Length: 187
Image (cartoon, rainbow, N blue to C red; front, side):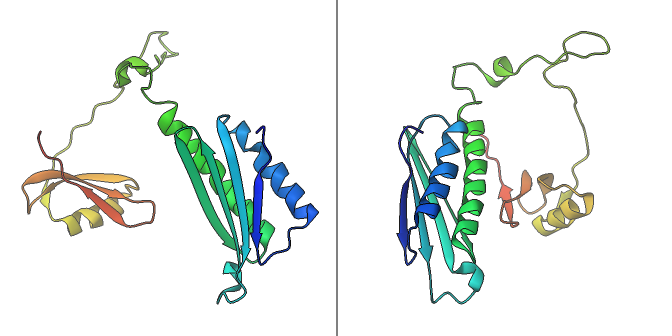
């Protein structure tokens, strides 16, 4: 990153040691995402927080052309909160790069963008769709589908025939642990 990281503090004295540590660590974020234009780090101490682990808050925000990524973490120490926020920011950057740089931005379809996979046993190209699976859909309620999803060990999603709507639905687990339901409509 060509510019230094902007470090702001509230209820914490910004020592030279803290500023050097933050600049060194956050200054390396451009290794993960080179088009970062600006980075801000805010360290805050909340004296009246009920839980000691929530007293120090570190917030990192990075700006670039067409994107803003922000993360916030809490800990009992300011630099520990900063380290947690930095780890979280690196994960967000990887997720952002996966969505925006590895996609179909060059105008090709998903099938054209897929790299050919060579079967090492035969030396031939594998087909784009490597496996097809057929199974019987039994009518069930949304609650039954959630139970089936857990019983079968499907962590991400479960396809089922919704007996209430007479349509095929997809039950999926959200990042926060709750469930989401996709109800497709023919367009």
